[in-house]
Amino acid sequence: MANGSLAMLTECLDRVSADQDVSRTLDPALLEHARRLFAAHDDGQPDIAVLSTVGWFHWFRFLALDGKSPDEKEMAVEAFARCQIYDDSPLPQRILPHVLDEAMDLATDLLHRTAASDDPLLADQAVDAWRRIVAVMAADNPNRASALNNLRVALLMRFGDTLELADLEEAVAVGRQAVRAASADDPDRAMYLIYLSDTLQMWSRQAGEPAHAEEAIAVREQAGRAAEDAAGR
Image (cartoon, rainbow, N blue to C red):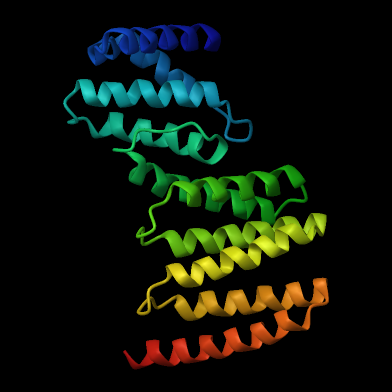
């Protein structure tokens, strides 16, 4: 049944691509196939072919309905958000900000599941998910600092399993990026500085580099000043 539904939707999308007629997606029978496919999807075993097909189907339906169907947009967002954290395929730019909001929620849940599990695959998925989110997020996105910090957390979780210094080094790098992404008046800036200091301390212990410990102390002092500034505003 699932294979048949996927084949029908794929054929519809091929025709839409060929003749640029998004109204082909308005067939009620095709809508039922799309809903069944998504309802049967298992986030534990993501099927990108299904998610991408369902996402594009609902997106084209949204366009066919002149952008006046929030339900179609929501279904496209839910499918595309899962594509975003598990795959690198490009998504419609018009809907990407909404997709990223949903993808961040899904990737945060993935972080929680990683923390509660000893499955190394989850740690890999969490790192990849946050890398993909950060890669397509605009520099001025107000969630960028938070996303970078979550990537730092995912890398530290994986480091705890593998003890690969490359993950720890990258965690420091994205921690620095998170601090830079936080505006001077961001109330969380002091927190990002503390997290960076902690990560530098860990890197110092693991790599045996005193310079990292010295930087960690300096960053901690910056965090104190940032906290004082925030309290004074």
